[in-house]
Image 1 (cartoon, helix red, strand yellow):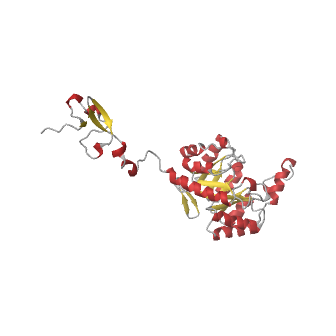
Image 2: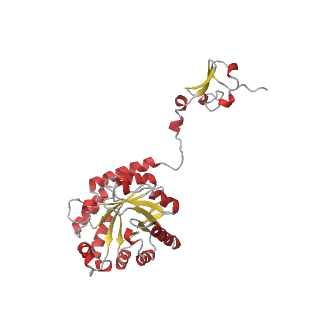
Image 3: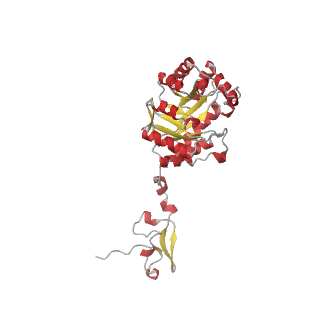
Length: 330
């Protein structure tokens, strides 16, 4: 199943589509947010993504155990004006703009903005009411799978299939940063083999290696946290890529895609052109039959190649040199 973001069509064989996850890294500051979007474009991103919510609608303000979390999200909550300004900036630069809704009113706001796609956060792959709300928009959905149990992912996949939803499934590990031995890129071919969805990777590891390898495993959408400056105050800046490192990500994933090739054993003409020097034909040498270079059979089809041992016959009857098929009798 192909995946659509506006007029773009993403298939399982598409070149990497890079999402700069700005998230909360706008610092609720219009100028910082706009500059971050501009730098994402310069750094090679194809899309920018934010988080949309009303804090009271997804965090219990009365629970002291999550008061710190409530305070963080409340500090970076964006109203409609911010969304429209950020969307305009992105669209003017040719970037796709979308967001992760964390509550029902967020879906309504994003729907009023006519975003081309919705993102479901890892923690909400088990949130049936929010999934239903987003599914009912009729728009394609990008879904992260971090921290979800296998049966929870399967349950969500079954729902998407039953609802005939256009989905991009992102392998994800909810550890910040993700240790290399926890990245588990084998999940990507697993999703490719068990679903008909386009598959991507929401990468929380340091550097560009995991995302580059993910391309080789079949990922076509790569999401990375992005910041204008890792030294800015805020919860996610330190775990995000700055413009220099994101540019390296764009370059590395482009090269990884070039290396990926197509499924199966594929032989290039440039390889077969070297057969004469690299392969062997059968030769009679004294009383033995041996394989020698050059492979004369590549230029003379009467000479036996090194696989044709059963055609040799009695070596004592052969002349020295390349072994040829006996001429056919009339």
